[in-house]
Image (cartoon, rainbow, N blue to C red; front, side):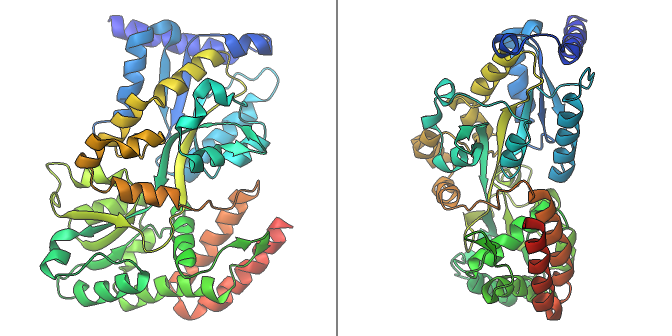
Length: 419
């Protein structure tokens, strides 16, 4: 009963905080009180994010209660929800719930900051030098810090170590290696050679860019659209040929992170591109592939992933919001979220931690992947750009002969969008 009463009071306080519109801005900056924390679906093993919020609430009580609101596991739906709330919350007299602390995808940070959806932050208050430089640069827009890196991300190549060891084959270092090994073994072992995230959503943009970069291409260069270069086309043609030849299964064009993870974990694939969060799930005691999984870097640069914690201007209790962000990103919480939840830490010191390095032999590969990761295009038009990329390339993957003209048309459309 006491827990139910505390939860009810927290909801009341949050609602009242969202409705208050007369408190001066300076009061909001230093005010404490209940807040909401909005993130995507907590897919970590053992619900580590929810556990972190519970720890905070046990320490602070209902006066500074954090209400954890999980969004759709789809990053596109998550973004749409945050944008709608930010736009509605900016209206005079709005009674829309305020998303006090928001988990913002790294590709949205610049767009949200320039749209006025995020509160500028003081780097000194967050000991910003303890974080990895690449995620901090991503959270800094036009010279101002707008978010704190909560979890970074870089793609990793998961593989069936037991099979490669049996065949005396080293993990692939290039796409040519991966293609050759997949062709040789997928028929022999009656399993898919390689799977990634090729459904029509943000994951396709990520997977496509990584293939393009691996072949020396890019989406933009010096402000110009170059996705129609021969190198960029070679990267997409490689994926399309893989689908045509069968070492990439046709089902991969419907795969997201979770569906590809489930397929690999069921023992159906030799290689999988995915984020670090998959590691604890794949190696859990009840996993069908436990003790049979290896991890290495992708055969080329990874797209920088990750999520940043930011504060909405509508927040009535911004001191609590900042305190919660510091709590979430302190070294202890970062260690737990990585060791138990697979969230790649943003605190630099953890990558050199001897205990973590002994527990997770792939930590150095993860550090190298994050360090060498590349940003997707930072522009207010990113949503339109990724929509065009997804629409065009999802079609091209099913039609290898159409890759060249499709990417030429895509480049024209992108130039029109950006100018």
